[in-house]
Length: 411
Image (cartoon, rainbow, N blue to C red; front, side, top):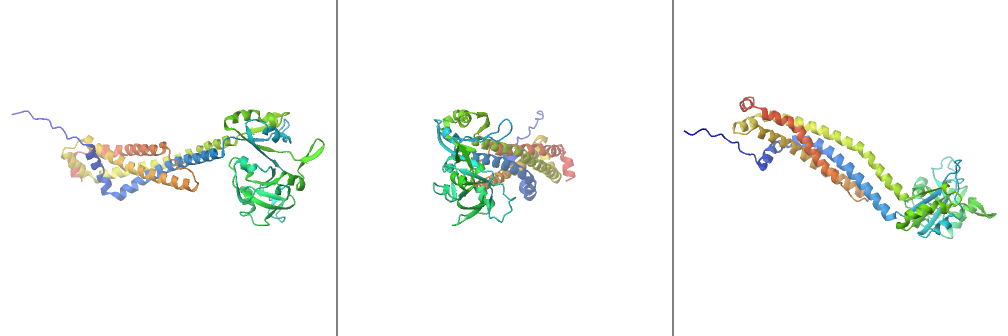
């Protein structure tokens, strides 16, 4: 008689494992869907936060690239005593002589003039609007356009005519330029010639009401003295366009060129750099929303663990029968662990789809390019698998420890 041959348990192929793991999900679909909902919400929140942040930054960078990164801004600085120092009258002309500079526009803030919709508005209700004189080439230099009407020209720049920035028009309640449209500016009526679109690189223009330098001198008393004679007022801000490859070099000499006597009293900045920094700063708020998404994932993990424990209790007969037919503890353990991972993975996939859809819809309304970073969907899948594995360990171990006879007897 031959010696007894040890029986080797049959190997559980991946296809068989996937089929076994999906039994609980296919037979209890509503329960599985509700269990995966928490994970789906958490993953969707993470994908949407990262996707919206990346899409917003991409949209802003695209807009900056379209407007150009070669705009420099020269503004009045402060003296050692803290007094505002006006720019010299000749500053725009001197800046224009710099070889790589090809366009120069300037404005002058008129601090003693306020604007109202009508003279009946209390003088304290200024709506935080600024009145400024401007040169006629401002829109092309700062990269904005006229939304309604037209900009100042050589004729209207000498008359009581103004152009409203985008925010100024909104605060004054003017959304369209009608014939005869006028506002109360500096104690007299000024006719509205046009309304500007938002100036991305020069946001201070949005809340400004622009008039010509000659009109500012005639009607608003914005004048200065040059060589003992009356002249138009000093500029307070100069916008400079230079060759892109020479921006750094121009930046280095702008202060000394604009105010040779006191270059340290001139501030020079590059608006595009500021906007890029703002876009990066917006990403700091992502941590808060990612934390909320992590909380939702934790709740989802607890839900998966509870459902898997209940599933083990309900499926004692199945476990006992499989053990009696030769299934090993490792195979039972792997079956329930795979089921938990599969459940979490389905929730993660649904969350990624929902987050990507939300990002695409919002980005399209803002005219941004939809960007879903790899870390968003990759992290969502990875988090779902990790949560499923962690949540399924305890139920899988409990299922594997059930003895066949005990499982069949208590089923």
